[in-house]
Amino acid sequence: MPGRYRESPLKKPSRAYIALGLEGSANKLGAGVIKHDVDGSMEVLSNVRHTYITPPGEGFLPRDTAQHHREWALTVIKDAVAKANITMHDLDCICYTKGPGMGAPLQSVALVARTLSLLYEKPLVGVNHCVGHIEMGRQVTGAQNPVVLYVSGGNTQVIAYSRQCYRIFGETLDIAVGNCLDRFARVINLSNDPSPGYNIEQEAKKGKRLVPLPYTTKGMDVSLSGILTSIEAYTSDRRYRPQGEPFEESEDIITPADLCFSLQETVFSMLVEITERAMAHIGSKEVLIVGGVGCNERLQEMMGIMAQERNGLVFATDERFCIDNGIMIAQAGLLSYRMGFHTLLAKSTCTQRFRTDEVHVAWRP
Image (cartoon, rainbow, N blue to C red; front, side, top):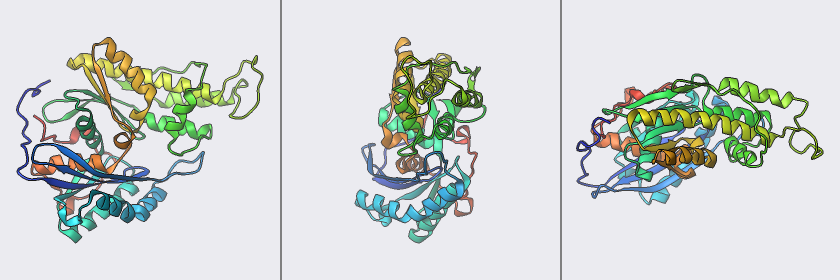
């Protein structure tokens, strides 16, 4: 990739820098404090999160999610600052998620960030949510030049870095993979605690039957809405037995576990295919999986098999950094701040559609 061996424009700091990051683009409200030290190292001082969980069969609406964020904002931020053993006056900047995400929750967290900025006279830094995931993933795993698979409730993208920009090689043409999994979890009435995707993963481990589903890759892009429609149709099949309903072992039946297994295997195979195509295109032997769905062990396993066949490596983080969190916003925001960037108060807005490739990644060569 161009610029891979150039000197980094980000110089070692002459003093320690500390940033607060605020994340609230969906149902997770996060606050994290990060420190960049004089030796070039990074230290997570705190990473606090609170999740808005709805009853089984229900999704989270923007208005209710925003209300959750407003109710919990002070508690989460105070907890993060206390655990970091600092005061607000010690901060160099306050970073917040500018987008993409759900409008009302984004606006609620941005309002909190603006208020703190004015109260403590600290500069604001608006951060792209996806870039936050990537920079935290790179920092934690040590991946150098990976193809990034970004998979979450609202986003599905295959990304690679070139010339101070994260380029999108492929993406979903309709719904995101996390949204697909979450919506099917609601259909079969799985719990939303700790998350629908996690509960689908656990169900899938018990599945024994692979039912046929549409496999829809279109070049470097994927389409998931047709798969969702197809798997929902199986719940009306005469062979389908809902959770807890008795059946004879000899019967030709389809269980919720079978459907979860089939959905995962089909969708993850599509994601592995487009990721491998991007690796071949840019000549990379590294894959970095980021976003909430990136915690899925089966996805990591399937990607690992593909990477091993290419003599490559897969990098992923655990749920502390994989699931939406404040520390990833602090990391990307502080990198940007150290390059001389900050967001003017009049420009401290949010946008639900803030694309990854719109960001100037000034801190990378």
